[in-house]
Length: 153
Ligand SMILES: [Zn+2]
Image 1 (cartoon, rainbow, N blue to C red):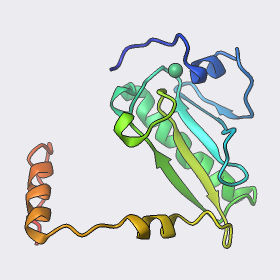
Image 2 (image 1 turned 180 degrees about the vertical axis):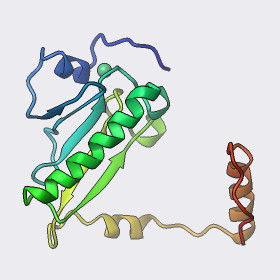
Image 3 (image 1 turned 30 degrees about the vertical axis):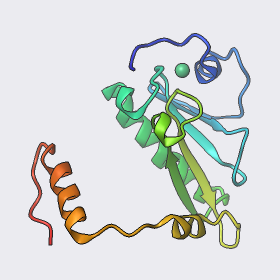
């Protein structure tokens, strides 16, 4: 992974203005434009300017700009009356069903009664994990943390 290869990347083509897009903002480290497959009106993609296939590949200086832009777009959706709330969605890696391998954060504007229905989808997927397994999983994840949090229940 990694690398700065841009050949054939549709999002790099948009950044370079070689493909059209419904632009929302062009920042130095990240840009935002409307998706052509919206789940709701105003559904926006925020992407790092440098080609980065997955979350782990985003350059450190562009990581913070990307998330700052996500915050700004979310606030703006509310200010211009497009949303009363937002959902954020990121697919990073083939196993996560990522489609375009230039990382993108979906900012999905939400309004009451818009029928997007994330909770219904989540409720249909929730699975049961035994307590002992939860403990083991939390220990495995904590063991790699730079600062170890306190003990879990
Ligand atoms: Zn790209």
